[in-house]
Length: 301
Image 1 (tube, helix red, strand yellow):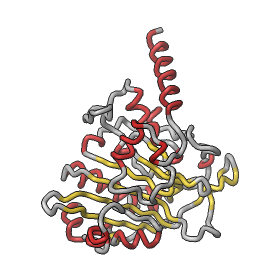
Image 2 (spheres, one colour; image 1 turned 120 degrees about the vertical axis):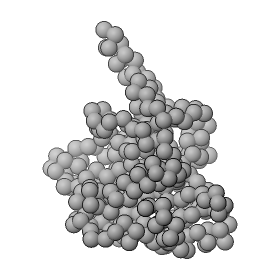
Image 3 (cartoon, one colour; image 1 turned 90 degrees about the vertical axis):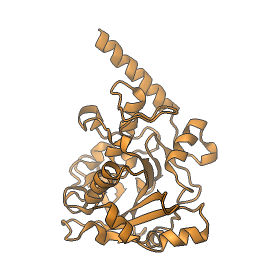
């Protein structure tokens, strides 16, 4: 009876939290709590200006309702956020987003031969993020902490990715996520800001996911993916960026991770986004026109 009561308590609380959530909104329309989350994850300006976004506990996303995938997802990470629960049971389940119309369903990926690729990675969903508090403790009984992880698995945070060539061991996306976790956060104890996204090169001619369960899904299959990492170097008193562009390939690539490193300017040209837009033109130009390869070679060692 006690277990049933606690389950009912959680179910009611979860519904109340979800009821407080909203669809994509512009910054001026956000609640004070949403603005606090937005300001945690968006560094020096939203990369696409002022489009409406989904504000989550652990990330902010712009979801493309036409392509049915995230256009970009921004997240802030510190070492404490790596303390995620085991990815099993309710923490492994992919979830339909309650905040968008015509949402993607998990069944849309059944038999599609694509991995459900997280843009904001599961590994940064740990740690308790209560108001005014950040700890390395994930509370299994906290509705807030549980919803943080559930939101990681919302299908608005997912894009189709080839498992062998990109998303799985040996893939470039997997390699960068692992390096961020093990080198930047665990080893170097860095505070980082990351913007990840998908690129559809030809909006008039792109492939879509076809499911054995639901048929034609109209979920766009990106041609490329990008990641932009931003850190503030306290010694140099300036921002340092890393840009990565990954071709969406089926076969395991024969390239080292840093072979994908590009100036952030290259990603801006390809996507039309503008990172660190609140910095002066001179400051943006200084950090974004170069790959900063020597800096990142040291950090990823």
